[in-house]
Length: 461
Image: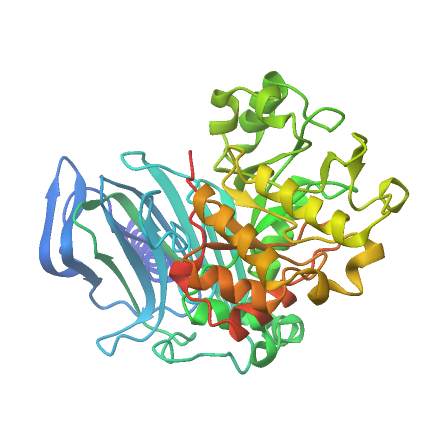
């Protein structure tokens, strides 16, 4: 056999081996969809795979993946929404990753990147008609999602995941990939590729060792119930940075609304500082709230600055008392009480006055100073509660269920619910040590709060 023939055989063997061992595969590159089984309105136009309308779907033929890195370049048109499904088949098993950039959607807690029913996200990092990248990496028990390179989901499935109806089939296994359109608009794909990962390189026992016990995880249970999981009252203070907050949010599964304290003598004191905050935080995975401090906040900041936030909240803890002295109600030394009933009536009047301010949410609600708090139910009589509830209804504000002080009580929450008032859950953290909304979740269950009882922020991108 000649040297030339031998060399050709060797080169051919190397080429065939490289093709066989390749772990990467282009699933769509703008030319054709022959690898996909389609249903509904699916087409290719201008090198783009387009799924239009509420019942369009494309499922990868001859695809069986377990561990992989899936990369997509896509965008949504107005009212375009749907999901990407993996480890799926004809039975409908597998996980779904949400595609939804519609900030006006009434189901506002399942935005782009959500690992549906497990890590629902309350904010999309991208807008309609904007091309973006999504990476979905499944590695052993780990599922990670990135949008434009930013991590939005980091989840480890435990050995015994909590799954309630209709999510029983939402577990890791293996299977194919599918994309589905569920909205009136379209989802468009420029490129889809996948890289298979070698399972022998994955330390699954180490992953399981750090996975949560989901059977006792109230936060995961809320996701399973399709309930919005958002802490509406989070502060970056005490060394709690935006990076630390984002990492903790991904770990716990609790979305955060981050709020600076805005007012005279507080970290943010004028419009320029408001706009600087918004410029640096708009692209972060947080809903952005303003806490108006003191009674001057509504005139300290312009309407344009206030409306730059996704929502605004304030409390009734700062006011001038009957002596004309400025009081911070949580500071014992400033609270001077001569007649408790008279002081209580003053608190109610101050709350009703605050509820006329241009805020969206009333926080730290129905607070009492330490000197009176041991008789909370006695001071908050039916007449006083009704007066505040009536003012709250007229204001259109939502009512916070507050973690820091475990207020208001169940009776007040039930009155507010019957009056049609919306609710928020708020930690009002004073340190980086964030809780898990324990009091809010207990009140949610005892008062039977549902998805539509929760306040919907006006998210801006």
